[in-house]
Image (tube, rainbow, N blue to C red; front, top):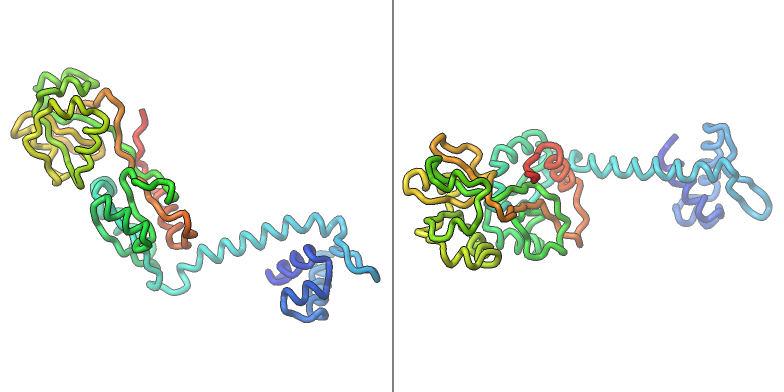
Length: 296
């Protein structure tokens, strides 16, 4: 049975008028009648009662409406998903990536996705958080990985990374015996933290103003890969998120912070724009392959 027959049946079931339905479908009344007769022969049931007053759905026809509607919907959904394969290499996704994703997922994640989906072309732009969000709002990006977006109501958001705040220090530091460690215990301590776009400073000033005014900050670092090692050479404490320090040297320990704080990174796309099949493909890939949401 052809999908067009099902569509014709559903349209006729709405109007229960051969002439009106044929006009909507842009086919002749004879052609529409032939489709309907062919369906009934193939199914072995009567879908419509015919009379001089017109046509009416039979009990079997009423039962068939939701069943055939589901078939047509699933068929169209399948076409949409397969659309990205129709023209290999022609579908481009413009993705802006914040610094935290580069450190958590790594470039290998994007390489693997590209290898498994050669029909797509990822156009990746690595930028600071503010620039990523501006690109998404302006339409310069199809999607973006955002760390605590400023305009969450404008986006559909898929949580990708959630990681808790920890204090990295030498194992022999007296503070290492406190687990969890309170912010108050860091007053007067030499502290380092990654300060991309000044975000960390803003968070500390907002949530722990008293702590921020009493801690000593020799300098902050934008080098996510090495800054947490500073306590090993210079003493003090490096404040960061757990996902950034998963390969600590044996001389270092990561102590949880008592006050609840965490970073959340989302895969976002604009609510005003329906996601393309290619965008859904990447979102589903993230769901299947990324498990970086810490609990507790």
